[in-house]
Length: 150
Image 1 (cartoon, rainbow, N blue to C red):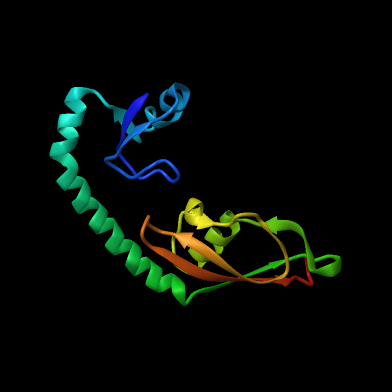
Image 2: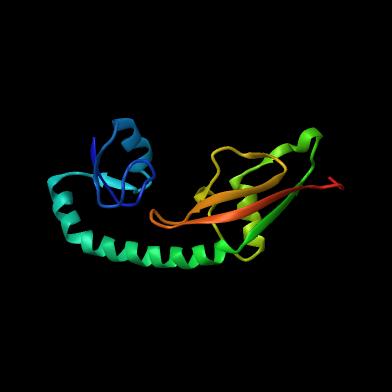
């Protein structure tokens, strides 16, 4: 099924692109969430008209993402968890945990923007990538320490 993307979708395309996806993905995910629209002749003409508006919106989003990246570059997140043998955690540290600590520091970040290939399961210091925009990423230091009271 041919669709026109309304928003950037990771591993699929950028807003305004014409993409070809499977029918079920389009019907069950993209179309109900208004992330894409059908690529009919009228919609393609309308898209050409709206490309300038989309470009201006993307520039504005990129500017705000760059400001947020500057704030995040200096930030350090310290998370304490109960630790067992060989510095292994009971449980793990996920993007949601990092987002909650950042919110406590006054930096609101959506947990889906925090890119962790795998949850953190050991104590130590880690560099975590935060994808704020398709062109803007920030590195965040996450320090996982043992909690004696837990």
